[in-house]
Image (tube, rainbow, N blue to C red; front, side):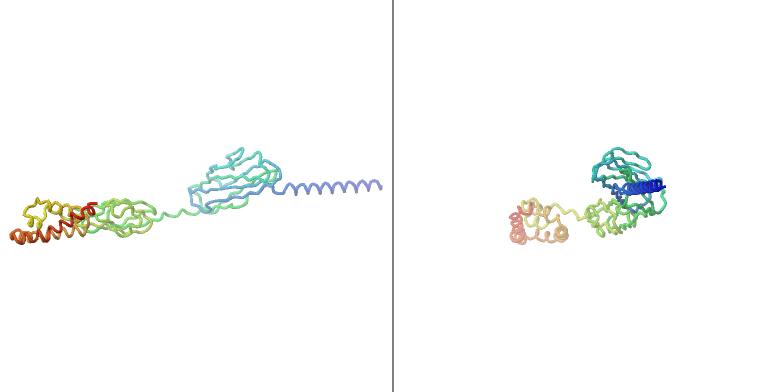
Length: 321
């Protein structure tokens, strides 16, 4: 009887030790073998848009082991493999990456792209994953949720176009037009006969060239612009009334110098062009008077025209360049 009790106690002790070892082995096996995290960007998307996903995990063991990553994404979404160094890959779904050997403490990176279906319903969608190593499934932490929202309507801006007298905007026309944000809009201003295009004024900050009749404006806001025109300057006669009267001939070399200065300097600026136009409007009767009086003709030639010609000749190197 006593021996039977001893055997019973011994058996009970052995069972307790085995249970303890079993529980200890389970605890050891349940310890994480990898630390894994997921990053999602962007987390809020619309139907048809793409999401970039990155998973990073680290071998927490003190020895090399094989590891496998499995990712479960929403049904109907399109998967595209990105960059990784996996020894083997199964597209799935779900996709699975396998590394035959991951060194102790080593880190592995996986990237992939998910495309949201164009008919996806609004709501939250989840990605779940595990990294398995040494027979332990380690959950992937970090980002898990993607929110699908209704696609935002495109932003549109108004472009109001007008012109001054003497021409019109032929492309795209005049009035108010609507364009999507960032749209380049071609503009063409056409001058009427007898007029010249001057420039564009108004909201011209995104215009490529405000001084060109054909240009482009980028629609980043509501803009109002105007094409400006002015009457063409009359073509001046090839001769100088007063100088011709003073020298008695339109072929004097001094007149050639005055004509060159007019064409090279005065007609190149707005003020100079107006002075030339004023001169040709007012000088004919003065020249007629000079031509009919010899003394006046001599005085005008020697006291007025000759000094002007001398100054123009002396400064020729400056205004010719």
